[in-house]
Image (cartoon, rainbow, N blue to C red; front, side, top):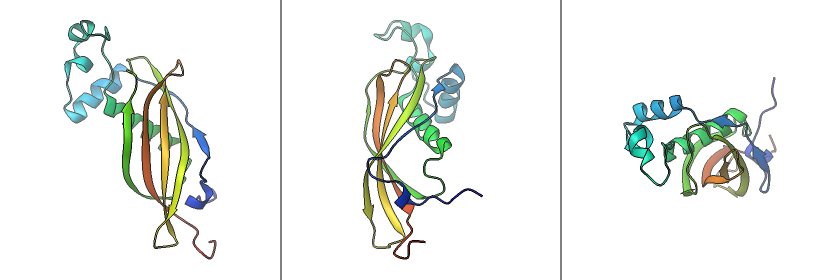
Length: 153
């Protein structure tokens, strides 16, 4: 049986890296179908060819979702998370094209207690990079975690 993870185990300054994933046509089409976002820059090759990018791009919110999924699949937090509290300071810094491969680096930048010693709030900074090691997206992800509490359990 795997050892239980608590927020106390995840310390400010720790950095975790995920496995990579290649953004495919299926991701883009599936995302459009799920969200209704059929903007031509994502879905219309003729339109996209005439833009400054010269080709279709992946949806920014989809890159956010893939980043969150990469971190969840990596399992850094185990079963310590209680609730997602939001994302802040999100910036899309470079386009992601179909065929690009992205990975995520997460740094724990803050850990704060709550009024309940068995719960804590952490801020994780996500940095999404492509296969050329260019940062394509950054955001701060805030979560509530189970803590060991005063008894250390």
